[in-house]
Length: 501
Image 1: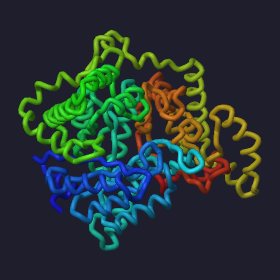
Image 2: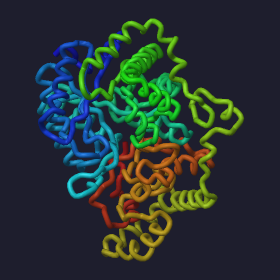
Image 3: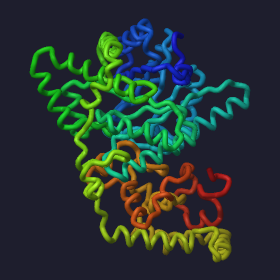
Image 4: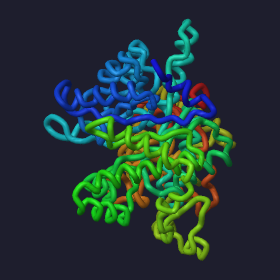
């Protein structure tokens, strides 16, 4: 093997280049042969550290990255396997992790994953038993267990982060979730895709200010007219392409042969700017036909890298109406930034205060009456009467106030006293996924992301530091349809002391 991904990202002066490949809905044929040929050419070229293989992107069925990844690994090129939480539960994920270890595939990009797309007979069931933070924690724990049994370190786990969020709430929650991922064991990060250099740099500044030292790779994409149009409409979750950039690309494609050339030049220029501002490497996507395109990009980067500052301005967006964590626009300085467009109802604030007060009174184990509540719970449980509390008090109250799903392992206190089961299609408990756009949910596009609502509810009371402040363990499915109130007081739920993290 020419390159080892973990070695390369750990080498101080090494600028790393990785390449993203997307298997199709087939196990052989031209599409698979093309992926293998691109990988073989990347190996022969010698400048690519690893290829990453996507895991059912867009939620649509495709060849497993494990299968094609093993073939690529066999001819000497290192592989990063995308690993999502969408399609299987925790047993399936651990089984897959052990399979990858057996296959020698140790580089994993841990992702919550896009929402389920359509397969045979229609849309598949979205599982999301874990989120990306919990998946990272599971892989880290599995690493420790395997090391104890005599194996060397097995997994090198990375995470994704999207700095391309243009509301205060989305930016804040995204960066807090990054911190939780790193605490859980992530050792590298790859950004989502965007063409806004100030947002790319925002992540580096945040990392520096928060003493985050893991290497960051910036995602780039070879933008053709079709892909740019889809992305600027927000049809690819988490990706940002401005209307202005799309219109520029569309004009370039009006001249025969110019569009692809301009796309290569644009990507090369952005690549050298990202190298110049301090990224550890770049992660190239959008190459589907030939490695020659990648070689042309890298050749051009070699030619222009010393003049990278000349190109920075090309990738600066108009900032009016958009939130930037460190670089304020004139509108932000005047108190008119876009995040102020997100106005929650007055009842949302009252709802938060009421539930927070109730929680502090009845569900704080430090409260003076906590021993009394525990004794009552034990009595009801011992007499098999807890169902009465659930049926006649807990369910009516929580279904009315929270659209409760009766999970039995309540997590509302982690999400601004909103239900992560009914409020988030991916049931996230450790922060938002990367798919929201302008504050709205990736799946329910007419509704605010539950984490955006949680942020602004808590901000009104200067309590945002409590949001995603610590790791939240996975939901305990054995508690389904039982009383979460009883489970809390009898130390059965995820908050019990032996589950704290």
